[in-house]
Length: 404
Image (tube, rainbow, N blue to C red; front, side):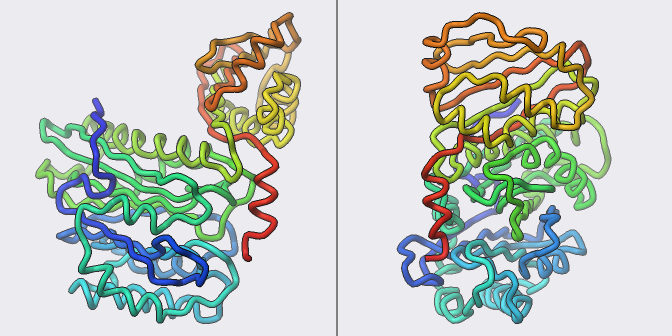
């Protein structure tokens, strides 16, 4: 049973955070450098983008946590440190600066960057503010959350309390992500902390499994970023017996982790660049979970369907079209479709064909901020959920002058 609590990444015992403005981009007025710190060395795990073009911080992070351990995270926004000749050097310098100031090993640092691709990242602003960053460590998850944002319009953070073997544990997370979101492993930047004791091997297993039904089921615009990364630190300070194998305790931990990741998925999708609506596609009756995931993701990725949702147009034909080209094993003559929001539910398609419905009620339902697309594709056991957003005029405006 998960209990929502306050504190974000600082909710778990032994974690602190901070965010400062160091001026990486001259025209930026909000914080752009974040840190998350554990009092003790923690088990660490991460998943990374499958884009062949990868940000230098991912390479450095992968090397640093190859032993399954880390103690801190440093992240800048405004510059992705990607496709730069000295990118590795800069990422390593960021780790070194934090390590020296915090009194930890350089190899115990997870480093991340987000922002414009292909522009050199000057280490000077970071070096100038590293003292303020570390000296200000405290219950400041919100400041760290702000510092990792780029085109995000809303901060994204959550925390829960849960039990492992009778011991109360906590888990929290922050995320950034608004555009260039169509992950193939994780998505954007997500940092999760927990005071649960779990081995690095089981932590990696939990995270790798979770992203298949969480972050890999989110899409805003169909573009997979070069810097996508989800990382998690587990410092064990809750005092539970370490989870070192599968079983009831591991299942409970995975459920807590999914509580955090699925919450952040909704926040990311709902804050898509220019978006006015969160779309949640729920599929059931598929032949298996994989086919259900394929169908759900195809629907929320359809530009035509996303545009219809912007216009509150109950164009269910675009749903069937997306199912038809998805590549899923599905009998399209057995597909039912409904739209649901706080204004009610309306059935628009039965057995692959249209049925009479009130366009007025459909419009009212689809004018809401959160919309569910309910799809039944047969009598199988496969279910899945995917999250996306509508496609608006503002998406083009935002990305037309992103660098400037």
